[in-house]
Image (cartoon, rainbow, N blue to C red):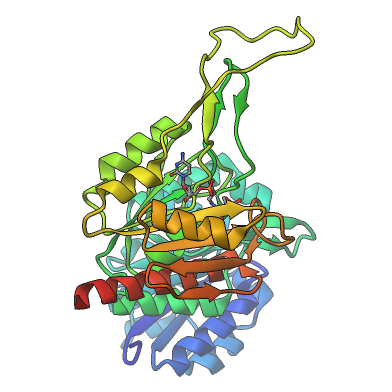
Length: 401
Ligand code: PMT
């Protein structure tokens, strides 16, 4: 699938530059013709010889290299490549790309590239979260640049958080999917994620502990596999995955409206959101004063979005989640049946490493045809892949009927 493809790999100056060697090696082993460009800063971290040896090609480091008068010019590096991958992408190279600055070979090649560009950010969490960096990323996303990562984890600066470069094998996987189209190519997937917040007064709300991680991983993996993803998300602290259409909502009723509006146009719905089941009957116009020892709240049930989709369902594959603390199997089977679902992903949220606000999950997936897939503790990204494998299987079975 990558055989004969020409990929230009641009390496910027971050400690993760050493990991790009594994990516270059993987690309070459997959039959890709790789040209490597290194910035001056990148060469402070890794020697060009490493990449020249792995790629079997000289490494390009300067705008004013005599090789550009020969067979390959800097425009060839940009325009004859099937893909340009920037790995690792620093805040600096992202800023240059977002603002059209071309003051060295890599930034010039980015500007001269008409084809797909993939950016794999790696930097300190505070830098990544800086609104300037986020604005640059948002601008490039809007212009159609692919973003892969960053991931969360321990960082070279000694801290831990978002900003770690995605593993080379995962980046390679995404590159392969870009060229094959992926098994969800052209499939419209609607995913809900995060909590809903139900206001009590202008400063307080009722909510739950959902971080959105499960749903955001589903959106990211579905997109990487070629899906056209709409992500309806409650308030979370996560960046939207590259290429997805993000619809931000706050309350269950807003989530309900956003999902119903899109339902007819999509092929798959995955409801990973933790919808707050009840909302205050009255929302106070002013901040409620703590004058009384007791405050009684009257709550009203929110619409059960998933149950409504089950009733409206036509061609769509419908996937629900069940967050349980006991009787997992029994409650899961009941939800699968009562809500007319194709798949039900059940997590026992009282188990360590499962459920809310952790990077891993432990799930049992119940299928309408009676099969049950029990998965051990694994990353939420890996769980997302397994759920999507089953979605693809359901779609194949549906088209055979
Ligand atoms: O976001 P994370 O921190 O990563 O945590 C992941 C998760 C624990 C939130 C996720 O794995 C999960 O279990 N999501 C579903 C949580 C939930 O609300 O479960 P439930 O059993 O209460 O609801 C069953 C299903 O009905 C869910 O698909 C839910 O989205 C849907 N629902 C529930 C209530 C409602 N009013 N409308 C709905 O559509």
